[in-house]
Image 1 (cartoon, rainbow, N blue to C red):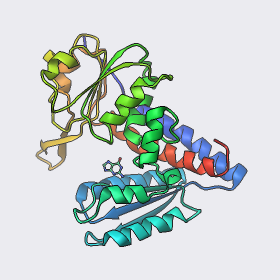
Image 2: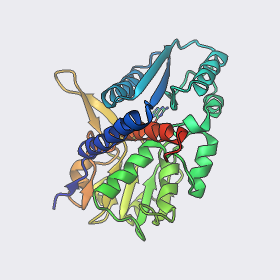
Image 3: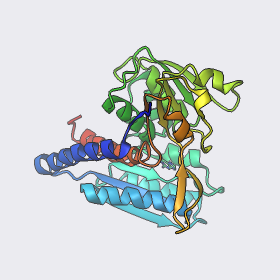
Length: 295
Ligand code: GUN
């Protein structure tokens, strides 16, 4: 039987409508416009697209957006100076430095320089630590999006076996952590698999909920999952072009075969992807609210 689709594009739209109401209230009652600073270093085409999407989302929702594009040969000191400027700018509540950064810049140093209260990516070690002990002020955007997809598709996680494939700092490690927190949307038994895992399929077959973020097209196939699994596919891989020159995307999961066995699955595109920017908008609004103590 074909799986139910977990439609991130629709859920994302719903959440953006909720955020728009919050923004109206902040503006009307408190005269406060949430503000997001995005910094793009260099001209990587993929990063340009992502930053453009973030800017557009801000504009649509009425979030003040300060985009700064600087050349690839910008010095680390100059970038740190720019971060400091936004740290001290009261119009700015969230700061996002698009990754990856050019090789001559130490990304860790830049992330450490962002004021934790404005770290809407949730990459600063203070925020990562807070996430770990369950007192986070922000949740990182993609994991937060995954939590919302599970919640709003009616997937209960409590007591379930969640298997995460991929140990990145942006997705794998934080989502594994969130899933094991003793709180709604968590309370799962978690297994975190990675490139060092021997016999990956033995673990993925045990999953009630399978979350995959490895950046390898169609790596998880039907023989690696059990009947009735809920699948969250974070991968967005370009696997070719249509005759018209449009990019063809595939997830990390072999959608066609796995959806025959799964109870529910996110499509690619239109699954996790649209949620990430939506949760960035949510974090920016939360950061703005915190400045007036309405949180
Ligand atoms: N590059 C790829 N994903 C992200 C993200 O979520 N935040 C930032 N800052 N850079 C990224």
